[in-house]
Length: 126
Image (cartoon, rainbow, N blue to C red; front, top):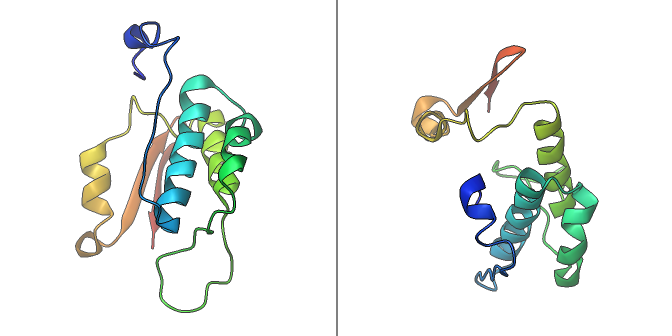
């Protein structure tokens, strides 16, 4: 549906999204729905989040490390982050290489994220 040729076909249709009632899945789903709105419908983060408020509270996101979490990211934080990445051309599905991402996200590959922009290539090691 994200392809421009299919968008008009489904223009007047509703999308029904279902996920398990587990708090992590609900928060993840809300983040994905909001991010999709930002990427494909050019919604502002606040516009994208507005219908998702009906399902609050969401559990916060945190890093995957063990131990005490010193910060918590909200669903809205993740939507704002994607909006900023799109605005500054740091995220684009046309150039996103899924296989490369999946290779470098593995512990065996060093958990390294590489992304390229018009400003050059960037590396993130975790």
